[in-house]
Length: 572
Image (cartoon, rainbow, N blue to C red; front, side, top):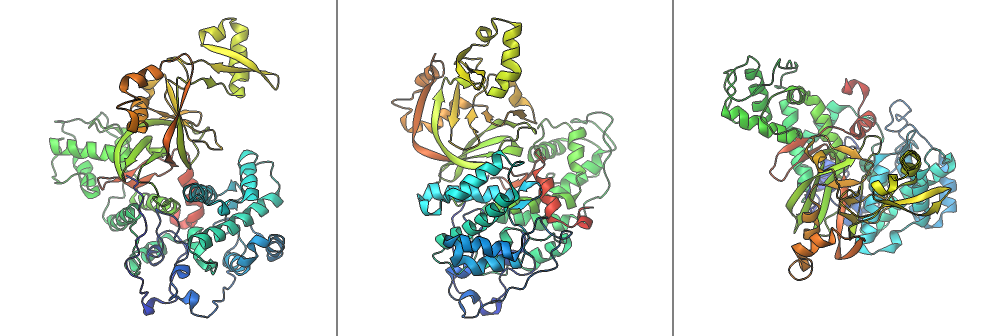
């Protein structure tokens, strides 16, 4: 589904006629001339000019960057600005970044000194993406030189206390992120002669006209000599082209909702219009003008329902019509927004890894680069979002205790104890101490434990982990946002067996795992090899069967990105 690919440079002879035309047209997600210089579903190939000595970056000429005064509070991708005095003061007081003085000035000049990593609502999405990518690189490459203690401290402080952080700390974090971005590029590409204009491609600086953006996508599709093996990006971008063409012929009107559910063998006047749309979208292979719901339409309906994350029952109802009525222009923007996210994904370093796609409510297990199996998951409520990040799965905890959070102790446990003296015993709980005037409560192992019979830990700052649940009925729902942020998985035993597969024949047999899941005291098992886990947020992607999938923007991340990326007239 979301396979990662390493970079393969196919041709190092950069065509002279293209010289000086890197990063043309629009500093944004679908500039194909730019896109072909940078692999997206991988570690940034931030600066091809560092890697290839024949490009204009090393031609002996200094490219003058002109301040882009067209970027204002009204046109900017962002709405926070700094000034050149603040920038110079930061550089003067941070010797480690002084070698990037020219890059700092060029980078912020081309943004008209607009912030890159923050807006008025706080950290921008790309800040979290970059920190995840940076930490992933540090962990995989065992390279502590990329670790910036001050940046990590400020970043964590802003995440935990974003409303209480001073503007001075925000400014410092902004400039530390930029400096670390330069350092990351220099470390990965063996040099510090960074073309700062390239970074604007990763961090949009101005709202764009969608029509011009799409025009540049087509115009520069095959314009580069360096073709990265970026399967997901290329597949998604191919669908973007198809949808650009589809927009010209797909109906603009909305289908009415049927008065009754439409099923196999029924006749209905709405059927021909449904067939037309499914045919145009590629779900129906052969179209006809009859009003009969036949077996061909049934297959097409189920195919469409699967791509949209709907219940695959072959029944045409309100939910399906709602998805058929989504304008193609909206789908195009959805693809563009997800292409924007793809570039921040790390390179494939391990061929075995786990991906949890939040809007899809799925966990995917990859072995040797191919999907081995997947399972349904439950993610955080809209008020308790599951955090997007990556880490290393290191531990399995069988028969876990559940340490009840203080907020739940205060709101639920204490009132319950006052009403019923046997409340703790009935819920298999016990008090283990006190903290800040509250009892420290934990739920003992057992079938009713809120974490189920097993949990899977990948240490992180967000206290997010995978776990079982006593309420497996919830996995049958099509919308599964029920947790407080952690991720509940539908088949924890199968997942445990996979993680312990090297020892299942001799040590962790099926019988042993069953017994471990039913102990009176929790049992920790350290994995022989930590496994990468990526918690991602894709509402549009191409699956391993080549089918374009869409999902609802359950946390509103797409809406926030769209507000920043596109001009108002293009969204209407």
